[in-house]
Every structure is written in structure tokens, then in C-alpha cells.
Image (cartoon, rainbow, N blue to C red; front, side):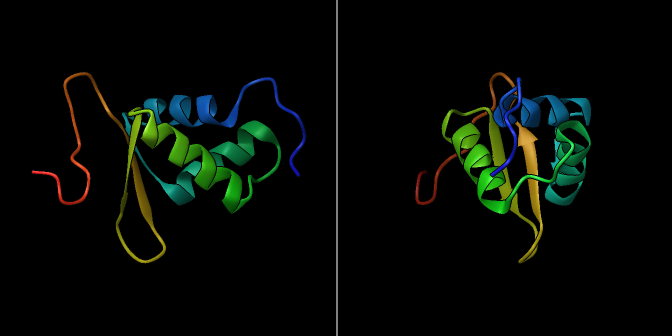
Length: 86
């Protein structure tokens, strides 16, 4: 379990992605989070944070390859459709 932090991981993710012009790859995000937190977040922690942000409509996560993901901040007026939505 990671040590307690004053800033929630979800807020850190949004801050880091916005600093990178709104788009970042997951491995770059992990390196940036490790620098901010002092420890590398577990896959479960990162996935939970990204899922929460995506459900809230703050970020969009897309799969580039089997092991790489692209995380981008959703700006005002931008919408992403769910699977099978037209």
C-alpha cells in the first residue's frame, strides 16, 4: 500500500497530463507520478484513478498497443462516444 499523500492521485494525474499539453502515454505518466509521489503507483491504483477520471468525463484513455495507453484531457465541448453509441 502506498503512503498517504496530501494530493489525491486523480488530481495529480490531471495536473500532469495538463502540463504535457493534454496528452501523455501511460509509461510517461507513471514516471511523472513516481517523481511526484516518491514511489511508483501500483497498476491497480493507476487503473482505478484513470477509470474514475474517465467515468467523470475528465480524461479519455485509449489503447495504442497491447501494453501502451494514451491518456488525454477532455476539453470543453469535446465528447467521446461509448462503444456502440452513434
